Structure formats: C-alpha cells, structure tokens
Length: 436
Ligand SMILES: Cc1cc2nc3c(=O)[nH]c(=O)nc-3n(C[C@H](O)[C@H](O)[C@H](O)COP(=O)(O)OP(=O)(O)OC[C@H]3O[C@@H](n4cnc5c(N)ncnc54)[C@H](O)[C@@H]3O)c2cc1C
Image (cartoon, rainbow, N blue to C red; front, side):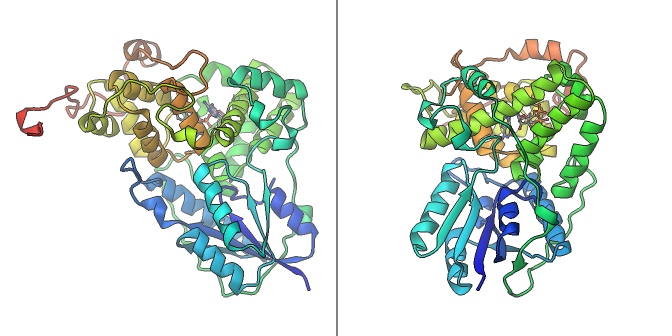
C-alpha cells in the first residue's frame, strides 16, 4: 500500500522549485495538500494590529486561487481549510490515517511552535521538514548557526567565498502524486482588483518574473533601487517571495542567467547582494528566536522611548507634522507596498521623531505590507531602532534632507496627499484628553 502523505502548505505556494513536491513526485504515495487559514490572522494582537490586513488577505486569496487551479490541471487538489491549525491537522491526520506530514520549515517563532505542538500531538506520525525558503540549507552554510556573524558584511563574505551552488529544483515530468480520495475541495473564488499594483499567485509571479528579466532593468538596478517611488526601480519580487509564489533561488538563478546572456555589472550583482540580505535576516531570525520580538532586541539595554497613542495613530493614519511621512503612510495604507527608502524613512520617524516603541511600527507594517516577512520585517525594524544587527547601532534619517534628495519637487508627497489638512501638530492634546 502506498504511503499517505499530508503536505501542509504555508509560505510555499508554488510548484516550481518546490523540493517537497519534486521529492514526492518521484516516490509512491497518495497526497493530501492542505492550506490552513488561521482565524488568529484577522484578530488584534498585543499591538492592537491584525497580522493580516486587507491587502495581504487579497494577495493570499489570489495566490490560493491560482494554485488551486494549477493543482486541478495536474489532477491534484488543494484543500483550503479555516480554523486553528494544530487541532485541524491533528484531526485530519487521524481521520485520513496519514503516515507522514511534510512541510516547509518556518523561520518565525510562532510558526515553529505550531509545528512542534502538532508533532507532540501526533507522536506516531512521521514529520519531514524541508528548507525551501532560502538560498541555502542550514547545512550548506559555511558556519554553524550559533556562529552566525553578528553583522551582514562578514556573513556575506563568508557565504560568497564558500560559493555553494544555488540550483532551483524542477518537478520531474511535471507530474504530481495522486490525491488521497477525499471530498472535493471548496473552491476559492477568483478576486480581481484592477487597482492593485501586484496580483497574487504562482502564474502572476511567473509573468512578472519573465517580464523583469526580458528587458534591461537588471542592468540598472543599483542606480535606481534607492528611489522613493517607481515600479521599475526595483524588482518587486518581495510580495511573491513572501508567499512563496516564487523562490529566492529562482530569482538568484535568473540573475545569473541574465548575466551570462546580457551583461554582468554592479547592478546585476546588487540584486544578488539584496537577496543575501534576505538570507541573512532569515538565519538571524532563526538564531534570535524570541529576541527578534523583544523591545531591547539583541542589546542589553532598552531603547529610551515612551508610548503616546495619539502619536502612533497619527503615524498610522499619515497625519503627522511630516508631509513626506504622511505620503508614505498613505501609499502603504492604499496599496500595501512602499519602497525600501520609504520604509526606512517611516520607521526612522516612528523611532526618532515620535519616540515610540519600534515594535508597534513593526506590527503595523506586519498588518499592512503585502510582502510581510517575519525575518525581514522585524530584523529591519530592529536595525533602525538600534537593537538589531546594525554595526552603527541604529539609523536616523533626516526627514528634511530625505525630502530634498528624494522628493525635491514634492511629486511623491503630492501624489499621496502628504500635505492634506489632516496633518496635525505632534501632540495636539487639550486638557480634556489628560487623565484625571
Ligand atoms: C522597516 C523595514 C521593514 C521591512 N519589511 C520587510 C518585509 O516585511 N518583507 C520584505 O520582504 N522586506 C522588508 N523590508 C526590506 C525591503 O524594504 C524590501 O524587501 C523591498 O523594499 C522589497 O521590494 P523589492 O522586491 O522591489 O526589493 P528589491 O530592491 O528589488 O530587492 C530584491 C529582493 O531582495 C530582498 N531585500 C531587499 N532589501 C532587503 C532588506 N533590507 N532586507 C531583507 N531583504 C531585502 C527582498 O527579498 C527583495 O525582494 C523592510 C525594510 C525596512 C526598512
């Protein structure tokens, strides 16, 4: 009798360069593919934010719709369930007599705890995790995780010197194992949003990927990547990478192919350089564990901040005294995406000008950013707040200088209504606001 395997899909919503599927396709098994929508994602957390804001929800549903269609074309089924993952999976493993659970290993602490809890509940079931979200497996890193360099540059140098090959996997013959006979999957409804700048899903990722590498944009990436605005100034792969509609290995390999067939210059190298930042934050998150979410991060002392709710609300709503920051927050709230420059300015403003606890900013980005990634988001926030892996101990972006340099004519600020009369004095409290 063939093995009965359950594949718990999480942030690996693709069939290409999916080593789990490639491996399963070569063996004898029947397969139950499951994605679980956790109600917890839509409830307020400790920071009064929902892990899944509307843009992220929409991108997720688009990604699930596209994947479900692809699985149907290949004779497989994607079951999208809603509920608390551990109890749902535990019940399903028992009902379906599952022999083995396969899953993509997670870098977030909460997600790791879930799988550990499930393992504890299902001690007779085999669990096999695969590291398929990163360029390298942990065993390919040229150092033990405990010896992960404290800063990015030594990490990059060591990884580059080791020069381990990065080879995306393929699905042999494009075939998938047969589904375990179950009731038909509940179909995901297609979601069209013509206003969205990026559409979720495996096919949409492939289309953007092909388009990006068919032109000459990779050859100018380094000269444009720092800009505040502009779709073509950076790759825009982050959203699909976050949901795993695309893998980092695929992007890295495509850059290498582009370098061979077009040109290899500083810009093409810099895309790989940024992918190494992503890689570094992933391993850093795994090593940091709960300290990734701690106020004092990797430092011994806490940053000096206070918490004034009215300031935080003004930052979220784009009604601070800083027009550029307001415009950035308006873009974020409207689209679910902002450039790296915009993220740095907004984060620095929250930490330095508003003097707020950086974790509230990180939690707000978690809710709003479509490309939210636990390692990159919390790692970058810690970096700016001076409690992370920044050798300079934090960053303060001068808003006036940033405006002069990156938005000299106010085009961006006007586009996103940064000067609107919603703009307020920093602490516009009157006596009735004070607690008695
Ligand atoms: C406060 C703050 C929060 C952030 N939160 C996230 C997040 O939740 N998810 C996320 O993917 N990125 C995050 N970033 C990093 C970066 O801003 C985005 O990866 C980038 O803007 C995405 O656009 P892109 O794909 O066009 O990037 P490109 O410039 O084209 O870069 C190519 C790829 O390299 C990676 N990359 C680039 N810069 C970084 C970086 N600083 N850290 C980690 N990876 C990087 C991304 O995977 C990106 O897709 C954050 C940065 C800051 C300052």
